[in-house]
Length: 190
Image (cartoon, rainbow, N blue to C red; front, side, top):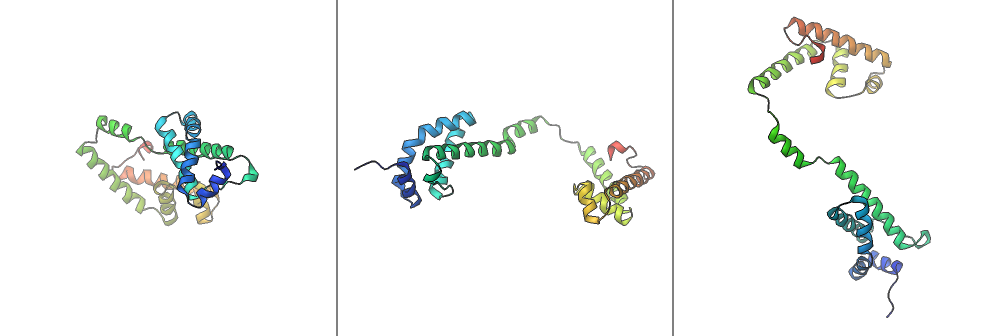
């Protein structure tokens, strides 16, 4: 009995033939591992990349066409993309080890500091609530919802300069209001 070529094995994998998947795995495991290791530079990650590639093969998430080139080239391209995706995903995830270590050395705010921040927050909320309608909405969108000047100008159908001017005017009113109430009078603390 002749040995099946890569394309034939791929077709059998698409038909959910486990033996065909096993044959492809045996045929390409060392190549894919060493190739992905050169990209991710970590043995565990290289194995994860390999596993992900074969899962994509099994689930039919990647489509091979003989007309587009050799199966091995296509498989290496898929491995490269998977490795890069894994590296990107890992760079976005926080490093929990560092978070835990940093938490052990971080100084938590004292009860006095927490009470002071709560009081300042209440004073600031009261001052913001006393702003005029558009100023209040714009300040809330800019500072509390994180919207850009451009988004706010689109939302209110106002020129960009008008939005910036209203933010400056609102901050001036807040500064005055907070100064009168014994709150924060230094702009840097706003």
